[in-house]
Length: 128
Length: 128
DNA sequence: TCTTGCCTTGACGTGCGCGTCAAGGTTTAG
DNA sequence: CTAAACCTTGACGCGCACGTCAAGGCAAGA
Image (cartoon, rainbow over all chains, first blue to last red; front, side):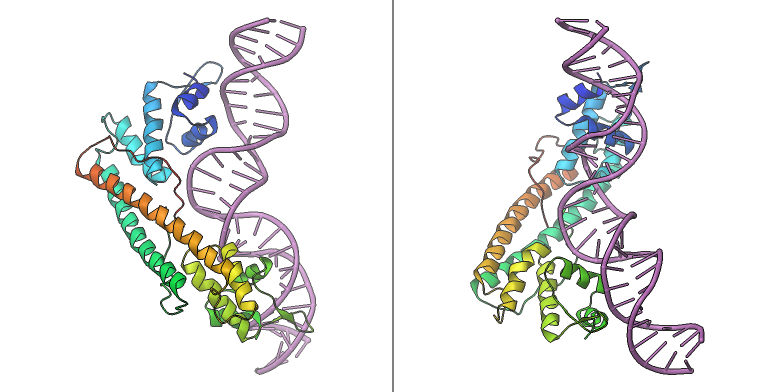
């Protein structure tokens, strides 16, 4: 199938697919006129990328999963590199949860009274 | 004091202060040679902005607080507009906490087994 | 006088995941 | 033959809070 159909079936846009290719996540055969040609396997790859993005992983982070699928594994997260990404993301999420709890309590306290004391530390705020 | 000293005392940069001014958060007197001149009150404003940013509020969101301080109130969050910002942010934080909990459980499940079922909904992911 | 260290405005760069033209080539339907 | 609907590459735009030059003015010490 060509890029338009792949985009439609995956519920995304051709622009996104071309961007994935530019990032080394997707490859395509080319027909004689230069059009990209995809198979069912590529649809599977795109779906994997989408579900990982839904969890908050960056495109960079999805690379090990894609490589794992390309290597012939049935699921993209059965390879060590993929699982390492999961672990790193989990740590990130935990840190973010803790941070947001602090912020939440700060906001509640401020809404209750004017208590200008417990300003939370200006740590990092990367909640993807 | 001039912009360099204000930046140093507030633990920020001159670039940030000029940016605040461009966003309408900060005003400055000008000396005869065109230099910005600040007072202690401005240091107070900058500190307010910083602590609000630490909670994850955007510069836009800090405007009501700054206006509140400028209006003569002792604390920036004693005005209705400020408290509304707090409430909105609290709702955001709550949504984000819920979302991150889902993601966390997804990651834990994936790390435990390969359980390709419960992919979390690709809702919004705005965790500031 | 010259250097040093302030200050000024203006404009472009950053990260991320694309959206949105622009300017063209290809294939198919009418 | 022509229009519609695909496809190609390339380049700029976006949001946000500044960082980082660039090119110059101002003030004070050696």
